[in-house]
Length: 354
Image (cartoon, rainbow, N blue to C red; front, top):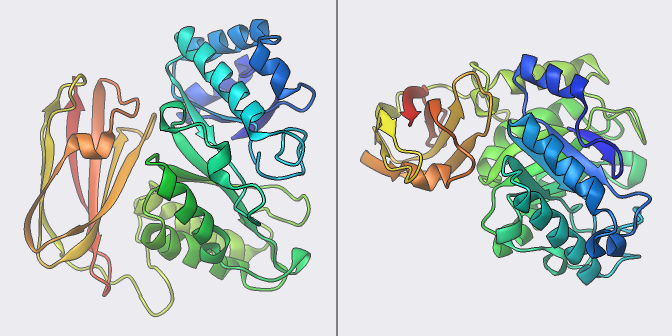
């Protein structure tokens, strides 16, 4: 994810070349620092928007665009302290409509407030609606002694996660997060937050972006060796696309058990209807996480968390994918379960969308 000023090229050639080589999915945080939202909504910047839509369309791969983020704060010129909600919404509707009209259907729109810090600017007032948003983004930090007190990841995000999931059915991205070293154990914050809090408390979170800068404090993941080691363990964990275990919080050692005794998925799925299903067997009632990703992890991912009963379970594939930009190609499906005493050995199946 990178920050781009409104008026600058949405994507540059060197960026798209690098992204294609590495298989990464980009997210652009688009900041209208020098343009008023009312001018954007009225069409004054349409030439630039058409140009940007063409850039996005020519890229061809999945692209997440996070326009005018943290609109509920007062620290940006487009923030709630200076701009009424209807002006913000008018600009959002105009941009999304123009991109869709220009055929830039590979763009997913990320609506991204800061976690609620009061009730003066309620999040729902600034929400464009599920027809206009693809992902809910939430920004939140553990400032520690830099600003106030130490907060674990659950404390930072839980209230706002509950709020946004009450008025939207869209998947959630923690679009900016990090922790300071000041006032607590940053390595522990990472381990518990990523391996326990997110999968257990925030099941609709499908991606996390770490704000890796030395800015107000040293947010960087390598601010200490302990922090770096904890982060390496996280990205090796299967929840985040790695191949290793997810040991969880201290006291729960993540002992793997044979909870998922079988797994089967339809081998061929039609892209039009996404017909097909996932069938799996559990040796005991458990909490199940199902993840679908393209082979090689290039492109969109989907995940759901649900309770599974002992014995046979079946989940329609459409319930997992929800038409979220999945194209024809080969995909990998991973199922793992937890019954509170440890994680299961994960099982993997493969299928094609045709």
